[in-house]
Image (cartoon, rainbow, N blue to C red; front, top):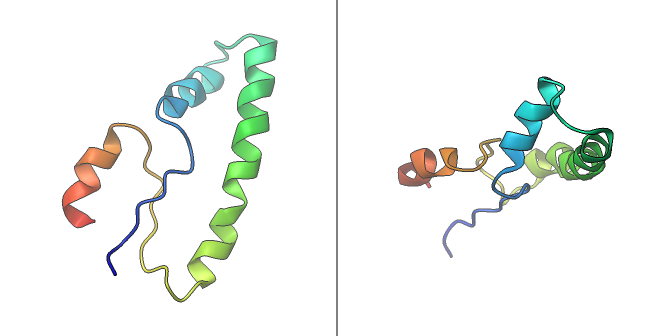
Length: 71
């Protein structure tokens, strides 16, 4: 069986994160980004403990293409 690539955040999430850091989001958008991001970060604690998992990265969006040869 081959490897599996799991994307935890949708493409474009990095743009929203950058806007959040620059305080360029409306209060509603800010709340939505936080509401989506927090639950998505929770599996990160369990994944490294699983025997079948042998690689992790936090890349998002177009950066995945740069890692493609390593997958």
